[in-house]
Length: 211
Image (tube, rainbow, N blue to C red; front, side):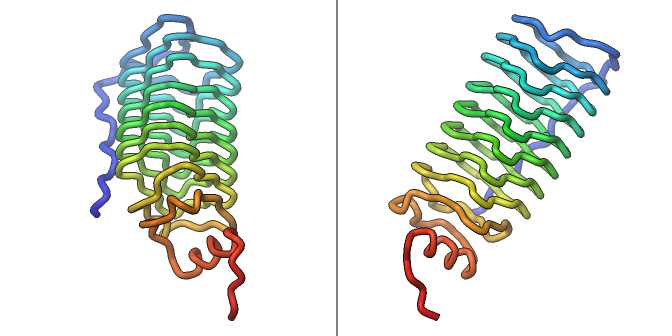
């Protein structure tokens, strides 16, 4: 099966600004913002549309019912932000720090994670369609009970990732690496791996491999 790749955000001519405020019920549209710290905020119904954020810090935010479309996050630190139940459409995370970031129960469409650090993050119970992780560290990340279509991993590290209760048919992990990984045994059918990866999975299932 040919896997679709995300469509890059189509951004209009952006207006550069020096400051924005994250508040409830606010729509931030058509802006480019650099070098600002927007951490430790609790905001509801915030919307980002057709924006570009560069070197923005958004640590430990709780963003409830967050929406994000046609947005680029470039060299941003988004660690430990809670995006539970959010919506992301045509969003590009480029060289971002996403350690411990929580995307649980979110919808992701046409999204690209490129050269990111996303260890200990959670994508559990997400719905992902046409999403690519490229050269991204995803160690100890949760992919539990995830629904997906056209999901692509390219040169990623997935050691310690957890895929329990997630369908794996047609998922291709051959271009990525892992030293240990957790799957639901009954959902392994159709997963594409290398011979070395198959041995790692078998050992994790308790099989004794006679060399």
